[in-house]
Length: 559
Image 1 (tube, rainbow, N blue to C red):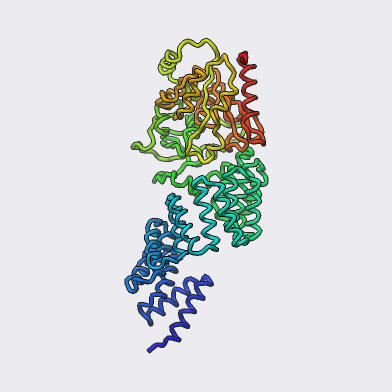
Image 2 (image 1 turned 60 degrees about the vertical axis):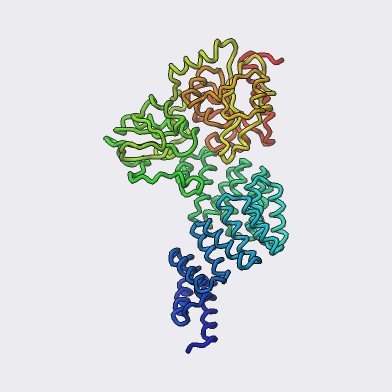
């Protein structure tokens, strides 16, 4: 009969092997131990977690389920099962296990904290906050709970509270690198990018191999338009972690904004590994075309992948397939379908989500610059309009607007609320209105305005057409009747500029990569003029320049 000393000695050995990351050695040790000592729950707990670490999810869950069946009151089994559930993405299953854990042991602070992490992944931010608060009540010195609580508060847009929580975590554990990183993320959300860089530097000082902190530092540097510094940070992250997608993806944006298209487009293909982009990836059985294979006698599907503005900007490449492809199919978002029905170079337009015709190859629209080896000097259609309003719709809107007696200007002041940088790239309507001179007929093309904005437009007798726009066919027809379109970075800018209309773009200090830096024009659109924030990140100087240019260009007078 085997004795307790033998069991404890071999159990300790399995733990040592596990802690030294010898997973297969520890696994073998646990399996042999269970052969000799069946139904030992503590061995099953270790073995279950090891199987999860090596990707054997089904086996891991089965082992922990057996452990729970043997001892239903062992809270640690539920806790490990919860960790396994979360490790393979079953966040709701993890929450259930942690709730059971705490039902057995109400003082299990790690279960409360991990439950908060699971709720965070489920975007249930208030539940996450409550879980972290529970963990902190159990253990007031729980630095990780304070740090993750800061993340929940940031998601709830309680940024100052988030900073306080993160500072508490750092006070408890000054060497807690992740808390410094999380504090940097909160600083960036507050547009305090210099402070964010300082936080990332502290995290890197503690953990020199912290690729995530290096990448985040690069992003903060890019928000300060310190492009070369940001590229250096991304390169450091890549040197540490050669498969770190975020570093490659963000480096591509830095290269593109600096005008380095050759390297930028190549790295831009790494976007598919980014968690915010990858869900949009299309897994067609047909091969991806990136400019290599001959398309003679073949059909190709060009498909939208990002926003409406991206589709409008990159649909220009469709014309390049004339003569090199047998058939070109364009799949676009529903609001753009009517606009593209007579688009030059396209044989068939399909609404995204509808049944696709047969095709031989496919290419996402934002991969076309890479496929065609685009550089600053060979951007297609940069000097000529490539989108046109339908004549019938133009006449409809001409009648609706009435006789034109003075210059007309279209206005858009807010972008898509789902855009991650919308807060910075949008502006307040009342601020814009203060700088618009009289004797110009202003037309609002802003969709989804609130009551305060509606009243402000009425006070200035500005026509609001946003509610009447069914699709971009309507928007294009209105643009055709305007003398100038004034807009923040939205799809309307791309539409108006692609039509060759006089388009004035209002940009934040740190622009999207496509607008590059330090220039008032765009290589993508000849008719576009850019008005950029300076380092103050204030729109007032921008609007003063717009007011001056409106007066000079249209000969209008102020009050």
